[in-house]
Amino acid sequence: MIITSLRSKIRVVFSITILLLGVLFISSVKYDRAIFEEHTVAHEKAITHYLYDYYLKHGKIDEAYLEAQNISLITDKGMVVQIERFFKEKGEMKRYAVDTYRLKRVIIINNDRFKLILENKNKVQFPLKRAIIFAIIFLLIMMLYLLIMKSFLPLSKLKSQIQTFSKGDLNIQCKSDKADEIAEVANEFDHAVTMIRELLHSRQLFLRAIMHELKTPIAKGRLVSEMLPDEKNKARLHSIFERLNLLIDEFAKIEKITSKNFELTIHPYKMSDLVEASVDMLMIDKPERLITTEIEQDYLIEVDFELFTLVIKNLLDNALKYSTDKHITVIISSQGLEIMNKGEKLAEPLENYFKPFHASQKGLGLGLYIVKSILDIHNMHLDYLNTKGDNWFRIR
Image (tube, rainbow, N blue to C red; front, side, top):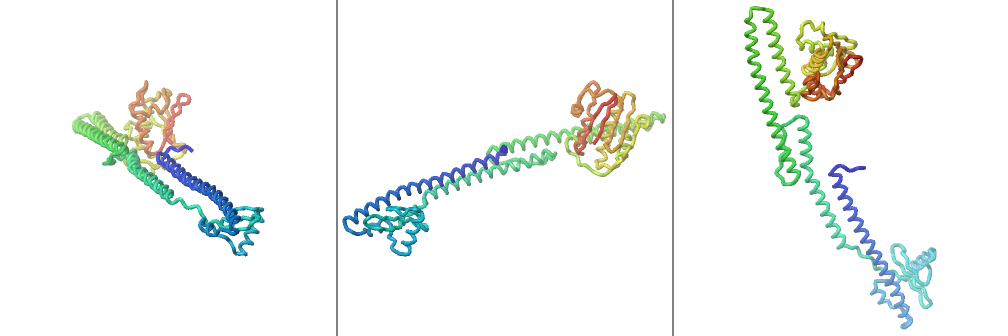
């Protein structure tokens, strides 16, 4: 398993450190016990030689010496019998033997002069000082670990702010008054967000000012067109100004979409109604001459009406513009919405036309960029296929 998270790496490092500290402590305790065992064995043999020499000289056991060495003489007959049986069963009943019986270190001395069963009461001392030192080191390591993990808390907050920012919410603040590297990153990101927010605000003001200024001459043009005596020219100019006014409204929607500043109003609509509304937006005379609609299976789809009709309208507009016979077919079926026209195959992969201001020999301009942006918001896709001179665009 590959560890990629920085927190996980720090946890692994500290876990290994604590594990090594524990192994070092246990190893030191075992080493002390081994040294104590060697010392005890040598000491017990020395006691045995002393008792034998003392007995040869004085004809008795030096019990005072045994007491001074913290070794007691076992005289209880029942206990003696049990100990002897224990050593015989283990095959250790010899002239000299040492073993543990009921958590007691028992020594049997059985020579030609005397027979003794002794209990060595000397125990290995717990290394209290060393344990205290290791405990202090352990606490220091844990405090250091908690301090480091605590320093990551601003990073989690910064991550949350970045996720909020990526969703289009620019009203975030992640400025920090600390002096570490994470605070430096947070402050730089906060500065970048502030600059982007100001840039977008100035861009919106600029676009709104342009659209406002455009609406004024359009309104004046509509008033002037009403004064024309020729009804045909009046209707034509009126249609032109309506079209310009509609384009300005669409530009406003596009600005909101591309700036991720648009709230969807999702409701279920029949696909046939959406197509009909999109055809009306084209504002062409007698659309049935140019557009044939085939309904194989109508269905409801949950979309934002204004945005989705803009998608269909752009696709219809492009299909008419690049159709060699100036005719398109719209098919509503269970497969989705399909728009077909006769024309040349796209010179590049469809994904290239999703880029804003894309230009080619028969450039699709900004249309497919807008279509892709709106479909992404609706979690939908646009497919393209060219077969036998027919271009097929399908929304699924």
